[in-house]
Image 1: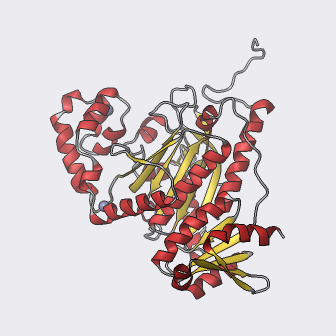
Image 2: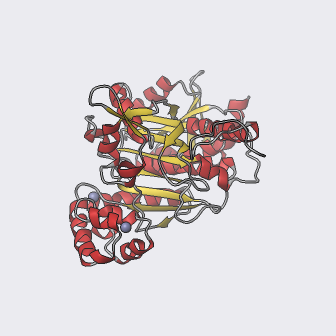
Image 3: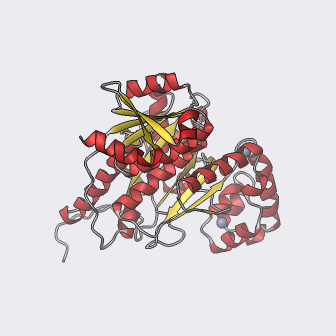
Length: 425
Ligand SMILES: [Zn+2]
Ligand SMILES: [Zn+2]
């Protein structure tokens, strides 16, 4: 159709009419439904933040901060930027609102536009949209596995098929300095073959050479030292624990030693999901741990992790497919575990229940059964599923109805059926 009128939308920023906005709304509904089942509540933060926030968190020498932000001056010497990603703003908001005072494990999801001055192409716009989730307050590997489980369930429920998941570890302040030095020495040897960006960042931020898009740099990075070879015991055992949990959840993944993500705040575990309709370099979603970011922005020293999904890219992957409607929410459950063995069984059950539409939570703090029951009470759940050493050896679980206080013991393999029955009756 020929354009009429005097004005056009800004380059890389488009409009959505009902044929398309209905699909957007469907994705947003799925995001709310799936995140809700994992106990993530919605957080809304401003589209504009102090530029310094992004510089400090994403990193001064990254593509995003160096050339992709929409930055403008405020009054005085202030500088503001349109948010290029969601994590920095969420951490800023959690600290400003001191959410940790009342909630040791804060879990939020967000939906909304982000802005980056990139070359517009299929699935990549200057105003693009993300669904993201952030969990702050724990270093437990189950948190990483939970975020990945949430992400994959969301993608599957929207109808995406043929995705692949890759994980890696980028090290921590304990092991990264030695790795940086090794990588720096290697990059010095091959300096004349590097692109201008990588040559410039070689001494100050050599890690960025690993996610440089220049084909020459990619080849060099593939032949050089990897973060995996320099991990400290903590990072190694964290990666091993997450891999074990993912295997337990039947989530297929591969290890990609070259994946580092383009943001400096990542530490330890990182992950990416690619879809079939997108190029191998264009992940549909990605995330990881950022255990130092909260402290770096002036908060307490606590573990945190998150992910984001590029919704334009997801829609590309869903082209020609109907996005199904979300189901009515099932009941609210709390899974209490006593001991590590029981935790693993409960963690797998947790994932299966969420896939059945239940809102289900558990404890990552290794707290006593009494403390977990208190937490369940506070959360106002319908039922608590208890599994301790006794139930574990008998192959049963105990289900407590929180309204009547009645407890019933059921065989392990009938847990889901009996919960479905009692909640819907
Ligand atoms: Zn480490
Ligand atoms: Zn390069």
